[in-house]
Amino acid sequence: MPIVHIAIWDAKSDDDLTILHTLGMSEKYMNNADYLAEFCWHIRGKISEDDKHHCSHFMAKKKGKLIYFLIAPTKTAKPVTGGS
Image (cartoon, rainbow, N blue to C red; front, side):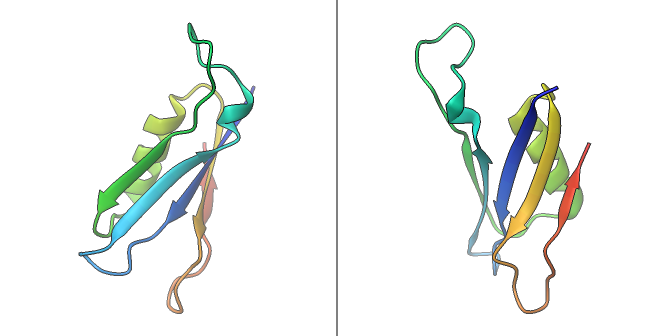
């Protein structure tokens, strides 16, 4: 079962962006395509832990074991890892 990594940068305010980005997908060709790609999703504002999980699953398309993690935690947040 392949592993899909999703990095998450948390928004610091409601005016900032939460960024979700796949890591390592560009090592494989997309189905029915002759090119490689990574996915990057920008969401305005802060999102809940449940939304991070659901967005990560959407990006990974549930094709493998999902690993997502928080990048650059703030002083009040600790690094978070999760998966399926």
